[in-house]
Picture (cartoon, rainbow over the protein chains, first blue to last red):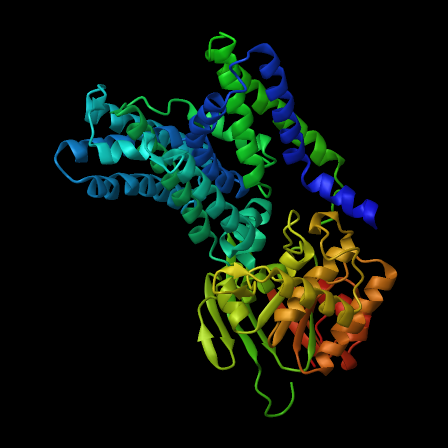
Length: 322
Length: 250
């Protein structure tokens, strides 16, 4: 009985346990290679840098769990940041600028979600389209030049501290807690996972599939807009090219965290751990003076390896007769 | 059916086409509470299309569905469930990656504080339900995808009974079951009729149909060719109706 419970625990939390192990090994190796790695300042820096990736990946967990994908988060991030920047530059107070910028993410998510769920269109193609639209809008509005110089109260969102904690870390921690509760204990999270498993079964059970699917993309868009807000505030600059290729990092983190790209599986804890592994790896590459471009290469390899591993593991699982 | 008894569900002139293929060509059907009605027919006769329409999974092109006197052009799955129509589909409609309790309560999860799913209640009620129905499952925490065909069928049947109000529809209810599980499921369906539920079963197994049902509705090429009392016909006569070799009127 106890053996069964242990086996069940290990199988269920395989990805999270593996990631914890990888993170530990990575930390030990990097600490041996460079003395600066294991300092408080550097660890804090990894957490701070990872917070934006974590927020982006949180939205992606729900999308991938529901059997979808969102390739537009990078451009949504840039576009909403640009709208906030324009609003502040035109004299609108910070809260008003946020109220204008954050709904851009919601709107982009709503448009993607409605087209995907309402017309049963491919999430890959639709979000690829919105990736282009968002980036195009950001470039058109700014004439491809960054906007900079914002009020201190706005910059506080990216580089301020609340007590001893940087505001991006605090925001990421709060959003992680909220997402974890949403995914594991609410109907919304239940249906996100069930949609990825068998959306027709969910529909036949009387659940409004389009409503839940659209709201999942809205959530993902909102997370991208929040990540955009933090990036603009941190750099004191709204760059139309911000968030370039962040989709791959977010997808890699979600898949590494134990989600299945075919849907039905997803873990907030796993995703956070995966973001920390990728963040630590990025940090280590910089400390070891290896160009950070290699991280992109590694990210791609990780996605492919994770996909192969997921596929091989699912082949080992007992198949149902249906 | 019985003199003066009102049907709880009527299908009137239901038509459904998929492109050039006419799946249903004006089907009429009455279902009464307390009876078990079989819908039989050859493959492609339109049986599954008809029950999907009654369950709200697909919309008819024309015709009316009358539930307790109220006419509807079409039903949504939620509407059908709210009207007390529960269906066990041939493909079972389970979510393989979710556990048994989550599948039993899919779409009807109990919540606490209006937001959080009451997992404890789901697990306890599922265990009680499986015990009551005498359905064997390895563990309530097992994923639906890990179950055998018969166990999966058991979960789908348990769900329909748990939330089935007045009419339970079973599409090939024992298709994937073993001998023992089939006997248990048939005894369960039989008892549902005695408890006052209206039950529709779709089956290719005439032995089951004759041992369970009071009436048989034969569909052929999208039309109801006859609805007969089970006691008034022989299996051979039903086979003749299915193949179009004969016509019997009860």
